[in-house]
Image 1 (cartoon, one colour):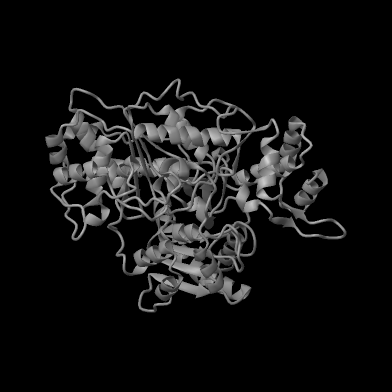
Image 2 (tube, one colour):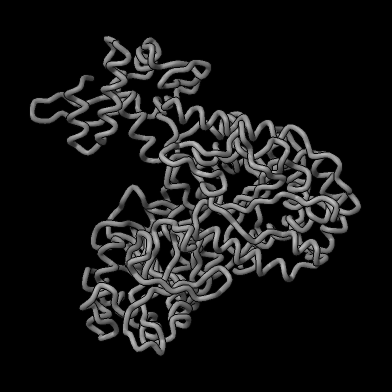
Length: 624
């Protein structure tokens, strides 16, 4: 391996500019005769840019990266033993206890130092928080709160919302995972009511609600505000439940031009409870910084769906914490506590047995769906996709008796445009014909086209252009001006002064009754009010007849049209299909080729990291 080979890998699109420059810098710093440092450093940089936390040397050892061509030798990774020996012999590669630019652990994982440190601090903090329970809990009051706030009895199973409530009462670290419709937001409000009730009027709990994006915080604020009004508890408790939510960056207080925050382990948040919604979207660096800023004695509650797409940046934190589906259960002490406080029995299959850890008691998966039935429709489809049952997925999609889930095969580019035309005219005509901005927003958000990829003829950029062409041809829009009536806008960066957040969707319209025909962009505020802005005031934005599945995370639409590309892409995965399907509350249509759908569902994204092994001891561990 030499620098020329790095250039070849760069020219082939395997390595980026940053990868090559980083490898060269590391090699110069190492001052080593072993050229394996070039490739190790370059690949460690490269996989981190793709979402992995570390480079798994074993999976690359002996692998051909570039075939022999035009008299040039093939580029092949070294054998594992040679690669490890030569890496560790340099001064820039150390073991976990060392302070070096690159860290090689005992499981042959090569980290950039900062990512090893993020992972280590996150793992250590979780372990510390799970060692002992919170004391001083009034058991009689907790039992009464649970009975009143969680009255439902579920046939054949304990009410897992009750289990989650008990976990949040006694544990400093609590994870609640569940799909759409399992009541995750409702349980946040109920848990906070229970904990406030436990504390009483005398003490005011310092509670922070947070989420990774501005859109997610807005939805969380709105939902908590609506739910707490209906809770079966005293008015002072409802008043004490906060409705304001912060993005994680805003909560921790960003330092300009710095990767660090004002709140950290040295200056923790003044918090008793921190609730993190949409936790699956939080990457490793941000989650590590957040947990360090939460006081060790405070409660940290993570809420999310571990089956959804992982964060855009490195890590799959929620998935790693929740384990990977082989061992389930609770410790005996926790089972006894749950049964005592709920007067319900936990089945023998999930009681204490060999391999159960204290961390199991901190994690609950909500399984009962209050929105969909598991057997059919969107509920059945999402369940089949989640399990990777391709045949069941296709059987459901091809069932002509259930029109809430449909699969449309792409036969040609013209066929695609015709299907798109039918859907667009059906769903977008009404919003484009109204002069009422509030009604336009409501009608527009009934339907959303989600694309799996950005580029190509089935990518979001091309699809948005096609839709504009269709609507113009149907005389539903007039696009002589950039800011035409009906143009939908997606905000792509936060503006806290305007209370506009990444993910917010607005509609361009003139003001009703105004003599001027000037266009404004209308958005719905967290309290349901209409907000209007002149286009020049908006933060970064784009047209949004269609959006990517990634951008749709944290949103919900009545009807979803999921567009797959005509060929396989590495980004296509089971998690992406599941996430796209579960954005819909009433119907979902998947448009694509059957072979692409099959390939997508069969591909599970596995991000390389050591967090799961650190928390669970390297064994597969399924939480209850």
